[in-house]
Image (tube, rainbow over all chains, first blue to last red; front, side, top):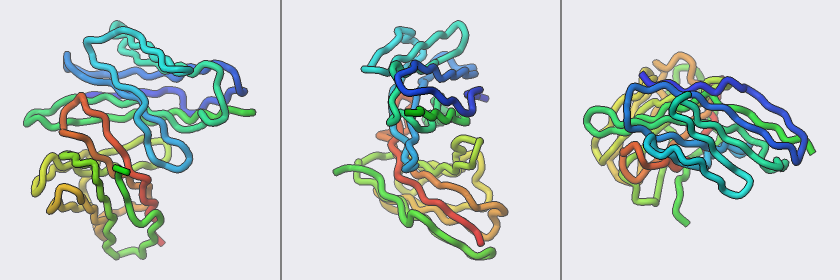
Length: 117
Length: 114
């Protein structure tokens, strides 16, 4: 069975600091997809990024960057120069296809990030 | 604007009552999902549906029921058999039930049992 571990339950940083959110996953599949979602206080999850298991290139999008390392089964998320608006719960998720073609997504327990002004 | 709507935002239920949570999407997505979120436990899958008139149990389906009579709608009923229904419920959809597709989420319904 697949599993996603986000060991950091809560993180507090001062505004403008960099912060890295860790994600470690387990799967037996060779083809899978990893996602990060952001859940602001309003409650609605917002998609941030998708990465497939064959693409280990790191990605940068503005102040956000992602480091995918298959050798350590990790998909870490870094926010550079954090801002108060980054305060949210962040979820890492692993997607695989079950028999019958159905998608199954397993979410981590989330990391609550608080950015202090 | 396309998106997912859930209603009501807050719902209070007395013990022993069934309640139905609404989920509607106008994204023309085939797949829809219901998740339950409890503090410190992330999101757990209740039910999912790939096409109209078809749905599958997720990891914690006991005490819940769903229907998928229309592509746009995927209501969730929390029955009296659900022993601990107080939680935050999220509905999601995706283009198809393929691993590559991200899910789009509604704003959620917070259910409290009195």
